[in-house]
Length: 142
Image 1 (tube, rainbow, N blue to C red):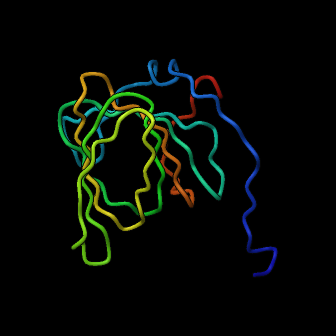
Image 2 (tube, helix red, strand yellow):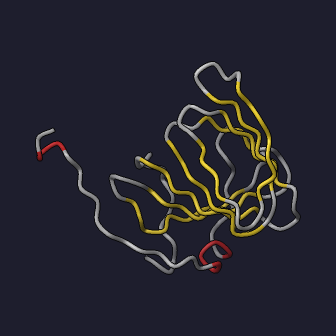
């Protein structure tokens, strides 16, 4: 691949600050009326990856189809995650994710999160390549 076709990323670091999420506005997850979540971009918004810090709340389950690979690390809370894997969605399963768990959401998968805890399901999302989600930058970074 010619050098002019490569999009180089910069080194960046973010310290997970709970206050960044605690003070972020509540949002409604796309296509899920009545759902609640909040998210901040960690300032790591490079061609290789976008890293966001998110809370999902107990209530409506959130369904999403993964347009990219994503790794999530659970900081607090508890959620049931159901998945159906491509190409034919015949392989499926369900797990309980809680603090200390890390998991891969592969590109093309259909995922359903159902928060089980009263506290938010707080997780760090590492999306690659960068999907360009329009998430506001965390206050501690801005």
